[in-house]
Length: 145
Image 1 (cartoon, rainbow, N blue to C red):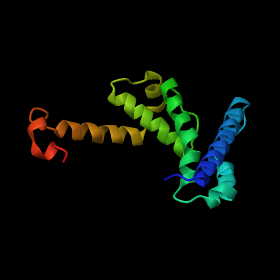
Image 2: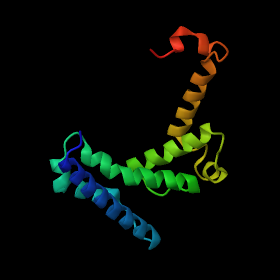
Image 3: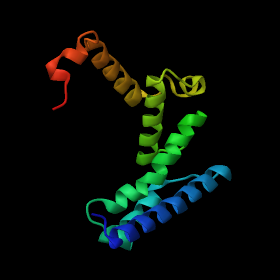
Image 4: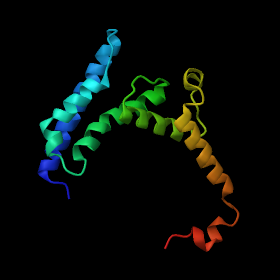
């Protein structure tokens, strides 16, 4: 059950993430070099991160980066080498791939997405090909409960 303290930590983490994203976008816009290591040092020294239990701070901090990655994937671009950003970007691209939509700009710029997404896509397609779709609804091992 989330406590008021956890909600404060989430709020502070999201606020810090938004400040870091703003800094990253400004650096990109004005030709600066964005370095996530500086942000990581701020995170590590943050009071709320130290008080966080069960990764409350980490998951709240990563959320805005993850969303930005997903938004960028929809627009066909990839801008940052931040773990949560890349995770959001890859997951959105993978979801598009399974829906049959692939952005040609991403393929042209980054190859068939990247090694991680390509391997996930190949593995999942292989697993789907192994299913016996004709008998799946009647097979007892495919039923829940």
